[in-house]
Amino acid sequence: MKIPILSQLIPKLRAVRNGFIIGLEEIGAGILVFMALLITVEAIGRTVFGFSTRIAYELIGILTVCVGFIGLAATFRKGAHIRIIAIMSRFPKKMQYYIDVIAIFLVLIYASILFRYTLALALYSLRVEEISWSAIPFPVYPFKIMLPVGILALILILPGKIYTLIKSKRSYLEGENINLSDELKGHL
Image (cartoon, rainbow, N blue to C red):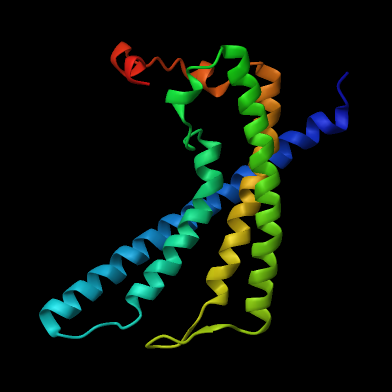
C-alpha cells in the first residue's frame, strides 16, 4: 500500500540529503586543497626562506580529522566503505545478507552515540570559544563542529542503505559479484 504523501515526500527528502552530502564533499575537497597549499608553503618556507608557519603541523592534523569525518557519508553513499571481502566470502550468501544488515544497524547505533558526544564536545568548544595554544593561538571550535556534521550526514545515509539492502534481499558482496582467486582462497 502506497501512501501518496510519502511517495512525494521521500524523493524530496532524499534530494535534500544528497545535496547536503555533496556540499560536504565539496567542503572536504576544499579542505584538502587548503592542506596541500599549507604543506607547500611550509616546505618552501623552510627550505628556501628559512621560516615556518608555526601552525602547519597542528592545523594539518586537525583538518585531516575533519576531512575523515566529512568523508564518512560520501564513501558510504558511493559504496566505497571498508568491507572485509576475504572473510565475508567464506560465509553462505544468505548469511552474508544477515551480516550486512546487522553491521549497518550496528554502524547506525555507533554513529548515533558518536554524534551525541561529538555534538556535545563541539557545542562546549563553541560556548567557551576554545583556542589552540600552540605556537600561534587559533580557534579550534570551527573544526570541532565538522565532526558531528559529518556523522550526521552518515546517519542520514544509513536508513536508506538498510531499506535498499532489506528490499533487495542480497548482501553487498553478492551485488558486486566479487570472486576471490583460487590462490587467495587457498591461503585464507
